[in-house]
Length: 490
Image (cartoon, rainbow, N blue to C red):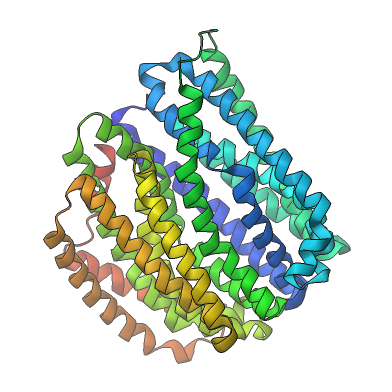
């Protein structure tokens, strides 16, 4: 078991790993956008959105179910861990084989259904993409179940950094968008091989004592994949199907605007994604030990700091969206600006769900989350179908924000049922955060006209950070020592 004081260290390593991955991803976004142009860039990510949708069936929540049972069994019955790993691995391989075969057989028809015949060669590579991406996801989630956050972070960073090298290298060599896709495949394979090697040598082999499997364990693992699959299906409807619908109703160029905006939002999510990934198994462990009060205080503190960071970030995105897009990827992508401004609210919502949603799976509330996610995801599809033809690509962004707001509030409500959060305390902090954000936004808005280059953009962003930091410390909302103490003693 991880030492009680190791949470801060694990968060730091996960954050550094995600930061490396995010920087690599940001560079990849900028370089591919510039090298490929809007049409090829949009076509590449339309294909990846299709793979993401099909990936539901090749993963089925199997890895996350295995991670949940590993977190539960690693203390009280560690001899069962090899059975959990073997069971989930075979389940996953079977799912990959079925979905991959179907895609190889039907890739031409699928391209015609989407209305983009140019997707055909991309979809042919889809079977490999599904297999290797599922393998990479499996490794990362199983490592999370062991609370091997440092190794998981290293594998994740390795995937993203190698993707930058492989994808950009193949594009520069003249292989275009298909070369970029091949770069994704190589990076998945590289990171998966490293992660699987670690799992086998350090986690699987030492625990493989030949003990018989516990009665009903395979059934319970399979059963718990059902709500997790429902949640991942709904999550994909939120994050992938909207991209496919933009491609269906509009064009690959519109897809490039939408995907680019989402990628910028994902770039700023790194701290909360790292914290949520680190804390998720901890919430489950604290509940299992009847330390509900400690888990609640940890969640409240983390939520306040996430809002303190991301509400101002959302305001900043709105204010500097146009010069950011223009300076980083070029004038031909300015159609992404209104989309990015709408998705600024999504960045704030995503910060809260990164902290909350995965924790619900470890608290045994996957079924409740699945119901909410399924409902809001279905509504998201309906709103996309209604808004994209009338409002264009901005309609997809509006649909995402509306439905994700509902999902976020429901997640917080469910965790409130588990932890009995101090709502008055949270509301008072939110009001103070709103005031800080308002002052910071007025300061940044006064100087945005002076942004003419990347250095001046960085100076304006830096000014906003200084104002935010000074106000946060002055009001007592930001206490670095308190953050460190909370993480180290949780």
